[in-house]
Image (cartoon, rainbow over all chains, first blue to last red; front, side, top):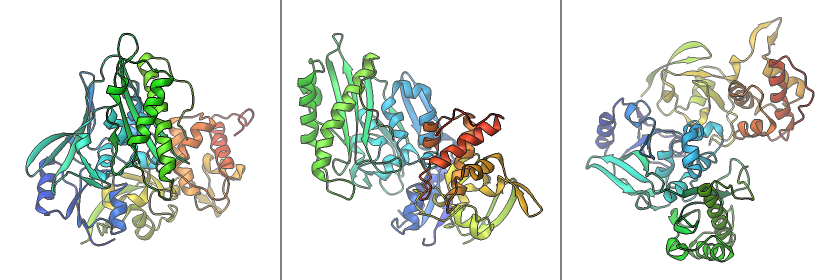
Length: 297
Length: 169
């Protein structure tokens, strides 16, 4: 690892001053599970690490009006332990539980996971399906972005030099809605071959009124399958709609061949995971758990 | 530039000067002489560098030593009691690892012991799946895990003064 400077400011204002002063040579440090590794390998040119962990206003989860706000320092292990969040947003809690092993989840943060901008990040499809927004603060002021506008490509976000994520918010889930996460992998510690998350909203007959499906490791960024609500609205979950959703997921997937899986396999599995997590999301909405496979290593 | 660092390691206050780039693992091994945490993958995959930070299991290879400023670190060296007659007084968990034959080459053992320590603090009678999930951030290339899982459950039983019956891994 090259020489670095380390700062541990106690206020957000001080952190922002340090980040702005360094002219792009500084990186905010939260859990460090990605950044410390990148610093060690020389993959990150940062010369200054600004540790955020002593800043009280970036800590903790708040629930308000059925929605949630996660400070930038909220860790995967905290999400896993949150029983109210598990009941309302099982997609996010399940996704957090797949990140690395317990020692990683005790450090890795939700905000860090989206800032690392891996197309295979497990919490990303869950946050996207749940309609997350990202609060950012930088030299130019503060802004809040829909998560879908936050990523630009693998490892790339819209954050400008000196800008950091201060928190992530989820809106209150609509009535008669449910959500779920699914993932394919070989073992507990491995990165997802592909992953997916769904949020569905049902009408009084139990037919779809809204359906959102996010796919991960199926393109340069995690994305929502376009047109799914239009295709499913007004219809019940049956063989026909299941086949339609699977086809749309396969068509939307633009995966790559790599060491973990072939593009063809990933495209095929995008359909399988689409069906699996839509069924589970409907089960969550209706209180009747979907039968079938649990994606638990 | 070396920076002052004060933290608690295995119950004792330690003051040192460290380079900011020094990881907690390197600091423990090379500046504190605590070689229990092992240098394995150095990328958070294998868990053999695992220590407790304020009681939570963490990979010390992914933490800068300065991030531990003011915090409490426990390493595997803290588990055994004082040495008498050349023999350290093994903790019940360590004793269970010996009895179950849970170590072969031993490289993963310090991390396994720390992972099992936090598990048994949260769950005094973990079932097999719970043990396997708690150890899922720690790789072992020798044992196939069965004896490690058995050792953790045996340690739980020893704590309760119970027997081994009815708890097959």
